Length: 189
Image (cartoon, rainbow, N blue to C red):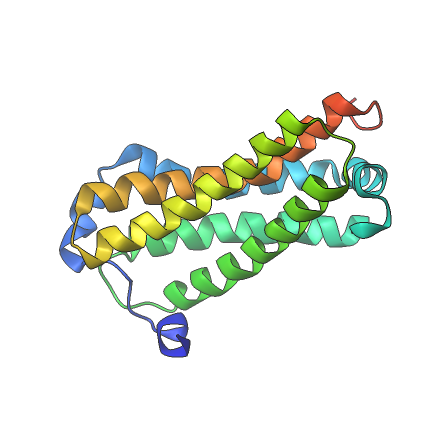
């Protein structure tokens, strides 16, 4: 695993590069991290209050830490685009950087998602929706990897695109669900 993580090689087939550069939704999905990052940075104070209110002492992020998280999401957006589009068919340092930051952000996202599902004052339906979004993202990531192994271009493109959007959704959906369940945080209010 360590070799694959730090390898400068891309995990998909080089001959897919030109075709992937024509997949508009695939390329645009890389930007989903950046959009979330900008939103998180602009609402860092409100997000801190929301996290304290929604999860009690179980998830504590200072405004600085949440601002850093937003900045990391913007960086991930850039790295993802460079790795998945620009250097898809070439060796590059962006491939391991993309993988490492993606693992860190996925871990943080899973931690927050778990705290919210377990401890936030939500209905069963909201908890199930959040669980479904994050499960969808993880399953699509696995299916994209399977597409690489089986050289199934369509499976890779479809599932990798959904993976990007679903993982951002797994961070945004809980915040909106708690917004509706409580009166504490409203974006840009």
